[in-house]
Length: 337
Ligand code: NDP
Ligand code: GDR
Image (tube, rainbow, N blue to C red):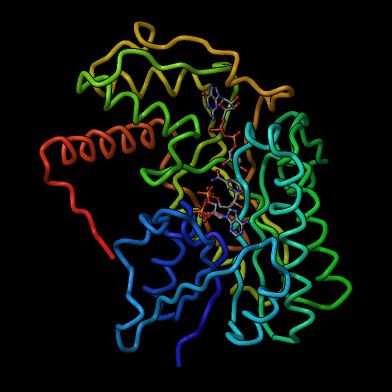
């Protein structure tokens, strides 16, 4: 019989790619779905299997990281071989507006899941989605030994989740790992993160639907990688003999301004004609530069990134242009259920 996994955050960017990866490896994949008044499973359209399908290997369960009892019940019922905690309020700017909520879901949520594993007595391995945001103000290059100095409620919550994961490993001998992932993007990236906001705007400006793009700090330096490659690293961390923590990054970075240049020029446009500053998108305290050193992941996991940020920008522009063209010509496929 194949393995089984539970993914929190399955409806997000990474969750959808990870679910595809695990299904491809023969896993039965359980996903935690939070209640929404509208469909929130669009990223799973390619792999969705309805409740009536026989022998389905993708099963969604309503629950929430704020509901510890639901997590215990789910773990006790499913007894998965692996758990991937990708669920979070993951937007850094929003975490300044909703700090307590972010602390509860992104920080305490990780602890609730760890405690649910302990309380249910399930023998499983857990991956915690830790973040380069934890390094915050500590200058690059950052690796597993770099001290944390978070600069947002989100970053603080992730530091809490990171240490809770290590504590459960040390206290209860749980196979618990932290992947410290640097920014990773894709055509499935949420529309309000800067890369996708830019590539979506490029497609809309090209089509004559938009003539301005408002952004905040263009000087921030980020090490942007390609999300499908990063979920492979998550899986590899749980296949090792011993639990450990790993940085996952490309080691190459650009500024938001450089990303703008590449993305707009991919559509034959000059970014300076369209981009305007709006302080609304600045953060009360900013993370200036994140550039990761993933040599540990390369030597112990055999993981190496292929796509670098400039190619990624072009991949995302192409995808947004094709998506918009399909919508405008009425050829976009809409799956109703
Ligand atoms: P997304 O924002 O795309 O996805 C977040 C997921 O969490 C969604 O499925 C969302 O559900 C779910 N979620 C939000 N609140 C709750 C809750 N209260 N209970 C249960 N689930 C909830 O994030 P990514 O896919 O980009 O990132 C995955 C994880 O990795 C996150 O934890 C993020 O913080 C972390 N991370 C991401 C990096 C990146 O660059 N992408 C880098 C480092 C870490 P819904 O769809 O309903 O909103
Ligand atoms: P980040 O990603 O904060 O690094 O967190 P985001 O794309 O939101 O910002 C990157 C940089 O761009 C600057 N910026 C803007 N950002 C947004 N969202 N919107 C704007 O209009 C804008 N203008 C400039 C930001 O100030 C910032 O410096 C992401 C998330 O996925 C986290 O969950 C994850 O942990 C980290 O990456 C690693």
